[in-house]
Length: 83
Image (cartoon, rainbow, N blue to C red; front, side, top):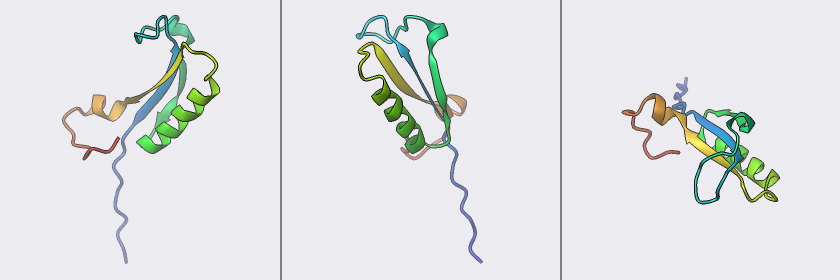
């Protein structure tokens, strides 16, 4: 009987919005932020980020970001360099 190895949950938030200026990360309107979702691994978050970035490619001021929530929730934990 093989044991199922628990995969570490690494939460990532994907969100975006229109920036006031392309040289900063200040958003034009906080109430207009697009919260795409929270994902359990970097690969899933990156796929969602790429999809949203591609959808908004015609708007130069629209930017999407991936936030490593697991690093904020547990800053002392070692994620072994994985996203």
